[in-house]
Length: 88
Image (cartoon, rainbow, N blue to C red; front, side, top):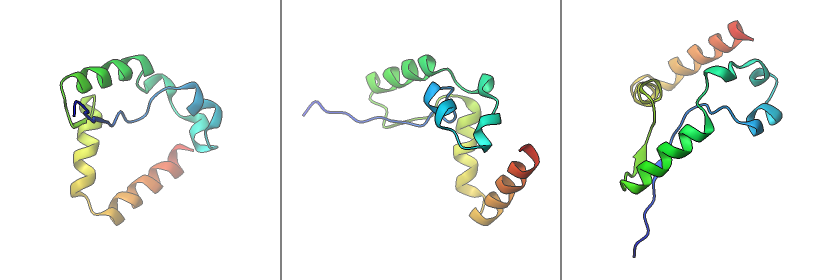
């Protein structure tokens, strides 16, 4: 049919929409460490052109995607909740 689908999983992206609509916790996020939207768009286009089903740009995002599959949900939520309390 000529139709392809690519799922792009970029992780945090530094966008104007995110900054303006962010909850209180995200207002203090380190936006300069987030991915650039233009870079993510280019990665997504390349992945689509290569007919990739799922594409996760960046080593850190790939690691995060892998680790959430093996760490029990309860343990992961405890880590994230404690981290959030310490950061904000």
